[in-house]
Image (cartoon, rainbow over all chains, first blue to last red):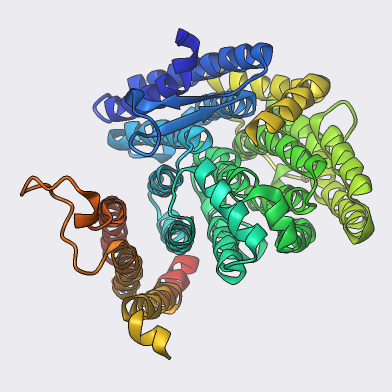
Length: 497
Length: 123
């Protein structure tokens, strides 16, 4: 086996080792280790992606050379490698961009814990993407839960502790349901390995046996992972958790952690159950309905909020709705649109969180819109970063959000019927609402400051400027290189199945 | 009804899961929420072990030199339960630590009261 094929394993182990090592290092060094690790992981995954794209294949990796039912198995393809590359880049920029805030808001003795958790989140994300074993997926769900809860409560004040508690409670309900559904699928099929489950499910579905238990199991998976990824009616923990923790934590939670759960669900639906079975049992309509409602309700909540961070947090609910709606259309084009939107949202949302914290710094630490007037001029880099990311989410051409909305509508047209009309209508309404709250914010940032408003402008540190420039480049590249990326996603998706 | 009699473990497990789930979701007291979490997890482990158990067979430990698989119960669910227990212990520990912190700060275990008190203070 060529060396490059060991990369997924290397990346996961490296992240875990760095996580353990960082616990013993002082915060300053732990930060450097984390940043270096994220860069290395991004490079390794990018190399793997190029290699697999050139070879046009995916492969099974046997841990310790034990074949599957006895050993643990990874499965890597271009799709997983691309997603891992982007997530590690986002983590890199989030860690860099939020480091100044981490120094201020986190107890100096516990600074390294932030970086331990970031490493664990990176390890968990990659494992969830690469694993081919359902139970390994569950174990890493729990590791991610612990890691993200610790990320929220790293900044110790009343609000973060309460929101960490709420996050934990909701998350554990989700994990409980996921474990229950894993148990049910094991009872139904007798397997934990994803491909074996697929074969058994196919047989059960064809022979018409156990349709009710199968439906219940898929429903439990959906609700369990839906709670954890902040799908609309289960998103109550989200605003406080993202609104009050450190900017690094909010960026990583919204753009990596919730995406990892969605991708695990994606894997369960497409590769493990099979989209034909899901569509046959009409469960994709459940996805679609929840997704469309989230698209509208999330944006409505965002227009109501008076606090910048909370607005950005609520906009995540809407964007996650897009992803679920895309998955719910029940056709390949919809799934690919959902994958592309995962990339776009990941890059844009973390940029919004990091730059909004820099903008608040330029406005005497206030996150209210009335104080943020003119912040874009007081802190030019943050202003540009925020505007680019906001424009990407709204769907201004050249940027990624535009392409994503384009592929969503194309998918809607090929889906036809009710799905088409509902999706197009929801896209239109949601885009309008996006314009309403995101452009309003961008305009606010460049309006002259309120009469008599004076503040000391804290300049963002060098690392934060680098991170924000990185975010701008990432967001623009995702739009400019849309065609190659969509090619990788399409090829990767067919190999993924 | 016969099904209920022959699958008593599964029925009990589902009931316990429901009890644990609602306690974790709805109870106001943090400690009772944690108890609910443990009841919920234990219910799943009960279900797992009852799925793996085969009447009249022994634990999958090769002591008497019997290599025939038909002599032993299915070891995989037991293995999963072990992993699950480790996970739920660590989650419980974190929840308890968080509860201690919240209690020290607000002197109550009632999550609704804590939320009210939190809204009263500045951030």
